Image (cartoon, helix red, strand yellow):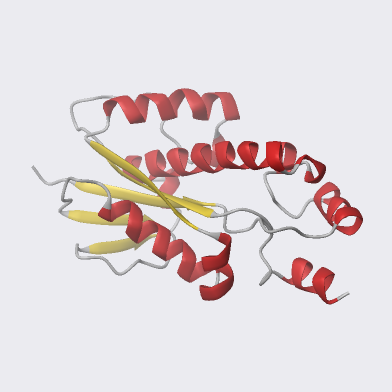
Length: 188
């Protein structure tokens, strides 16, 4: 069987939290209704479809790159690192890896970037959904530890309310110091 692995990430733009990547090999015989770019689905629909993916895919994995890795490497390289980690955790060897976007991680399989692949390739759509739901869950967990930032609402993105909370409370360990708004805040 010619197994295709789809890969996508979530969390490149936020000022806080890790970046998440998912890798998915779909089972050609198991239909999953509602596969689409995760940004096109409501949060509740994403959760519903994510459950189907986890239950019906041949293999799937979630991996992360930490805030420290983002700051040390840059967000692109940290995203590629998380993608590589996800593929390496699969436990099933794909014949080909298709990655959303225009950059590919260095991995031991044939790999191809597909621009807007999360809306075109079902396995990438599945990875998009798993990455987004996993990252959102992590941001909800971080919200319980750092409620003053409102992470439950904006998931770490640079919204007006997040920037206002940063101005009032300062940055903490979950904020990406290499990002301009955080760097400026820390420089005074």
